Amino acid sequence: MGTFTTIARQTKDRAVSRTLETLGQSYARRFGKIMDLKLDSENKEIHLEILLKGESDPVTIHVWRYEIISEGGRHYLVAGDIAVSREWMEAL
Picture 1 (spheres, rainbow, N blue to C red):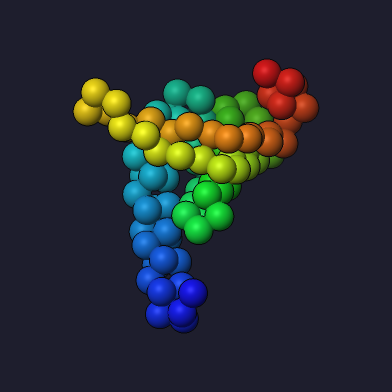
Picture 2 (tube, rainbow, N blue to C red):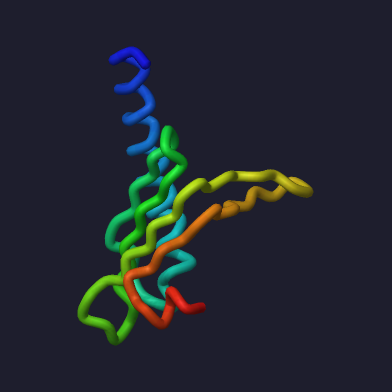
């Protein structure tokens, strides 16, 4: 992949990450606050850190092999694999 293509993809990923973080804040507000969200479209990975209400350390969520699908005019994120930094959440 050329340097220009790589820079363009990384720029797009940063913009999409910021947009998803902003949109996600409205959904996460009941539970906590999104501290960081990074999307890597080339490797199909998402890295998310959310500080849950009542917690002192953020929860880290890593999604691998994601897909975005459209169905009935709505868009959905389908995760191939997920890892969570809290053992009890990982068990769920």
